[in-house]
Length: 359
Image (cartoon, rainbow, N blue to C red; front, side, top):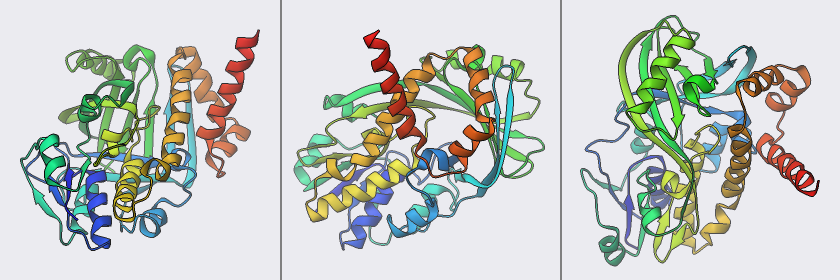
């Protein structure tokens, strides 16, 4: 069986690894000339977002057959809104992962577990050509372009990220998040540490271009009173959307190219890796891919309901949200239980909207 994968990202590498488990050696066509991300930075996973997965590393090992090691465990969450601050503490809120060109980066770890996959670097292949030459083509290039061309992309949110490596004094197990319409509109800013002296500082602003995000970045530094020493800066175009169908003919759409990015807070690691593994299983075992990823799609649809509600919040609403997170009952249910907050939160919003429509 001849299989081509477009993109050596999380989804593409995970798909290749799973195919190898079935004795298949795919070919990956990668736009870059290396494995990893252009920008060195830190990303996070949060248990509250990952549910119904309860133990992420065990899930990766037992379900995805991958040995993935995080950089740090998140033990402290600090939330800032314009006038409020809430701090939560736990032994395990989630994990921090290294992104970049390093061997121990997330993509580097996945790549090191491949044995028989050929990677052709600096290549942007033509989908129509590949779909004729190969039995299956898996699109995992981290961009909605092909999904748009195929007419199966519905945009949820887009914008630009500006980030920087910063120096200072950090708690290496702390994730910090800021919400303020004055500098991130209905987006967010966050800080993830490499260690006690170095961190990634990131701002996402929806519906702006690369030039406009600079204005909001400067506002962020001013209003949030960021005093860290700013080092190397980077820009990333960010998007989230719904894809359907995820399989057209012999072409699979997975990872960010298949709608894996959470529309609320931009998480995409687990969805991308899971979609890669499930696409491989669908190809080899002849299983219905849409059914295999149904749980992922349902979860992201729930997060989209929360995103629509989030979009309506004013700065006062952000203050109320951050205050609520610290209320003992809400805090316990949200962060210290296994309750699927996205699922039940979205369900509550749908019920509320139905009641309002009837009035």
